[in-house]
Amino acid sequence: MGLFLPDAGCGQVSGERQVTSGKTKRFPTLDDIEVAGKRVIVRMDLNVPMIAGRVTDNTRVVRLLPTLHELIRKKARIIILSHLGRPEGKYVPDMSLAPLVDALAAVLPGVSIKFGVDCIGTEAEAAVNNLKSGEILLLENVRFHDGEEANDPEFSKALAQLGDIYINDAFSSSHRAHASVVGITRFLPFAAGRLMEEELGNIEKFFGKVERPFTAVVGGAKVSTKLELLESLIDKVDHLIIGGAMANTFLFAQGVAMGKSLCEANLKDTALRILDRAQKKGCTIHLPQDAVVAETFAAHAASDVVGIGDIPKGAMILDVGPETVNAFADCLKHSKTLLWNGPLGAFETSPFDVSTVNLTRVVAALTREGKLKSVAGGGDTVAAMTWSGLAGRFSYLSTAGGAFLEWLEGKVLPGVAALEGELPASIKAGARN
Image (cartoon, rainbow, N blue to C red):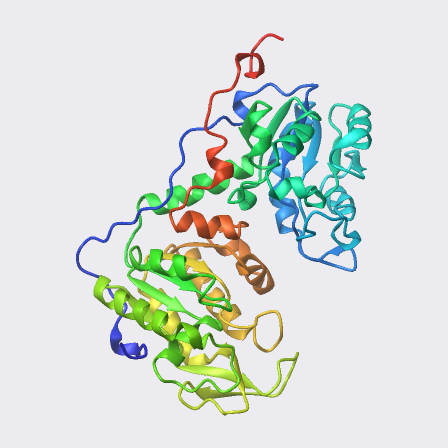
């Protein structure tokens, strides 16, 4: 179990390694329901990055447009439920969804978009009653009520009283058994939105028939948050590239001095077990060979590139180095399928974004040339790909975070499971009212 070396090879592998993951049954969609004039509650994920009340990345907003456009065209009265941050059942001004009205208006010109100062109660009911067909009402953060995360039946019922139909278009929130994701389905007829369909359809298609060699890139800060993912991927992929600060833990486990680098020293035995299991499963793990180090973590801080065994005591690893990027790129050039989750370095702060951007360019080129099928998602991945300007160059980019990871781990997602069922005849498309 040594460090990855270029001559370890990333060519074709022998034998068949089965790829399996969570699967979904057929669920109702917008094709199955009649929405004209009806109060349609749509659970969306507007948990977007904001600074000083301004949305800094509207990727998740834009991905919701197919469902919104269809509901507007079909003259539904649209009520949006969402969360933002972790207010823990209390009103937190900085976590209000009010700024999202402008973000929605920017991508829906000419559409009337209103805001409700609460998501249940008399004020919410009054706002819904004033809503006309084709208009949108965004209600306040559902997590301002502790009944949301508790999946409280009374809170679920209060939400349901505002609508006639429930649409879940928040795949990225569907790993949570919360009231606006799961509980509300007990009180209203329901269906999946277009983004939910797209996410599940593409992910399941991707894993349905994988061309090999199959490589996964996993980055991020901590091994502890991705233990189950790593264990799951070892059974699925031929090559597992590990970057970000989580690679430090594996390097430390192999006896590499980390200086001041972020490292989960208490997971040394876990890292060694994962490396050993991967070797027995025929999965080659690739770790950094060089690194970009600095004494302080700050924008444009003085930095150096050093070999992975030469980390100065007073420095910290903040990105993988160019030799590592070249080795990772060589592996990808010999791969047919790629799953990417997590950045290789502290990409939000220049110059520690270089490796993530450069490897993304390699993936974009290989995907464009038809040599690689690439899927990315989870965690900071969308932000990192957007930062590189190449998010649209992947075969598919999932906006989901935890849900994407839990699906890959083979777990049942409560929000998806809740959609499995039969619509009442009175709400089906074409039914006479």
